[in-house]
Image 1: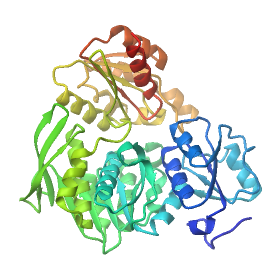
Image 2: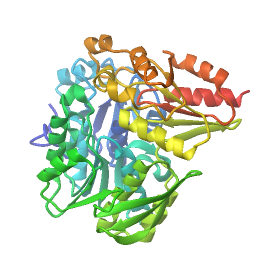
Image 3: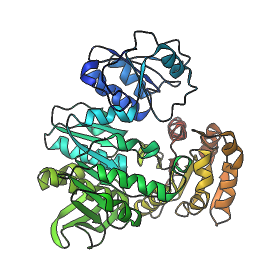
Image 4: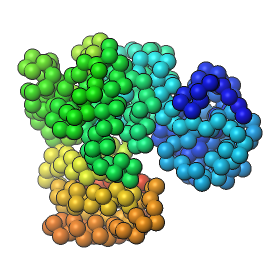
Length: 475
């Protein structure tokens, strides 16, 4: 057995892995690919597997990674020094079985992320929603300030070179995922909690356990650090009691340390004022991405970067130029005055605020929403929330549920057709079209100039956005 640390179950020393072979099972995942990029930059030999090729795996291959589309154990050799898995990899995965049989050290993605963070000044961005955008905003601001941060983000951010970067500066920005309590492997000096809601109920069971996990996260922030939290979230109010560090709050009212006043939305721009410490005017800001939820994300990013010492004008300029992360209200194309947008929203709150933002940006236009539910268990647990999330759309199309970590029971307990019926019963024009290709054909036949089409979900519903844009462009 290859052993490089005395306590490899809890951490690893990546410096000892330079020149050695690290194998990623599921290397095409957004988090896994980010860590793979960091380790390639650190001089590791990166090998991996993923059942699907993607732009992320193509980027890694260009950087020197060797990747197989088979996960049958055949690509892994005894020369492998370490295997990295995400929380989504089960013990019956053939690659993982092979690693166990060969006696290769296996570590979780979050353990590596935590060990990397210990080498720098860690900034961990957590929350049920808004993690990716807030992480991307903080990273963009720090990069514009010339601080060259290392970052690992749960989405591709074209403005700063993708989802990961190994910087020369001493700051490390990481999106901190709560699933499987993964974020408790981190060692942050600065933390953010954007919000706490019911999600990942296949793991946590209830909101009390979720809130408790966030309380554990809050307690991780070093006493000399800072925790930035949403002041209007009652679950955060419980979790933050566990913090040992100073806490700064943000919201859209003057009860917080940082608060925003939205001046206008529309024509692709959100304009707002920021005030600090209960009333002191900070400055006027604007964003090119829609929604009051993104103003809140900008407030959190501003609080973090001000604490670090970034000049206010740099923060303003960086936020004004920020064009978003891929799959976060990403405009895929405009053909014949038909706008096609793709978004990662897969939780009722995310759907509701994204459609509300779309309605504010496009008040006079017909909005279509194509939603692919993600996980049978999430759909079942949050069915009532989903049923009330689509009222800002004029027409909704539901695709089949995208399965992930679902049991046989869950896959028989709920269906997308059931969700469609619940939404229809609340007065929304909704229909169920199981296959993505059929949805593209249906939209192509029915959309008209001026329409807005938004595809939503954490699965592969983005294929509809690209398929429709291509088909419209060919007519």
